Image 1 (cartoon, helix red, strand yellow):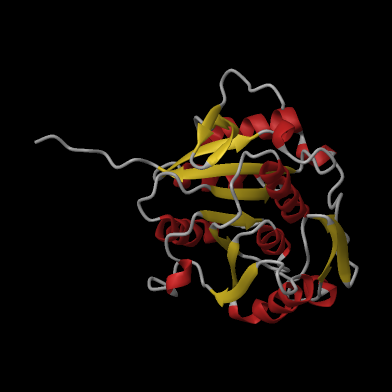
Image 2 (cartoon, helix red, strand yellow):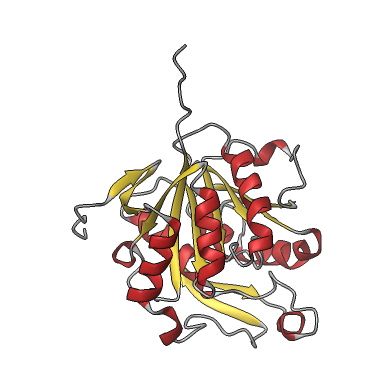
Length: 268
């Protein structure tokens, strides 16, 4: 097992080390100055022009259908191709589970912005009961990928509609999960408040539920905006690349773990 850095902490139900995020500006500067993401090749593990992405995970070959015409067309639709951050997070889950650092089997997991569904498929294959969520017009492709990659006995995964910030009364299966997952969900400043409202609703007051988010390092302003807003309600750590699956590491992606802050007890 990799040696744990001196400054690392264990957060929530994830047993591996995470580097505490002390400030939004400092974390963003660190990732961009030391990692220099722009100098690394984008889409190292994916091909957005292909009709499908094939990847090995959990001892089998998975095939995720994509819709490159919608992605590259005038609409610029999200959720129709797989991004590096989804591959990195899916392989990280497999690696962490194999090393006994994250108990996935038997947990209730919710994936936000599931898109093509790779992360949800891997979580289900690892034994989680998964609800993969996205916007209404993204669910057809998501459902197809779950159905074609998960057979009888392969795990439990279903699809549900979820609009961030607008659904204060989601289906019961979404509330109080053991694990929340998301890849490439931090992509614009306008979406930050709605995303955080949904994360807060799902996590409730449980201070051990890990929220694992893998993000593409495209825009330092957007990331800093998200981290600054999230730190009001969550404790945040950055999971360093040494903890990732060895063959799926890139400086263009970061993995963060968020857990709810403990309520402050007021003494009267």
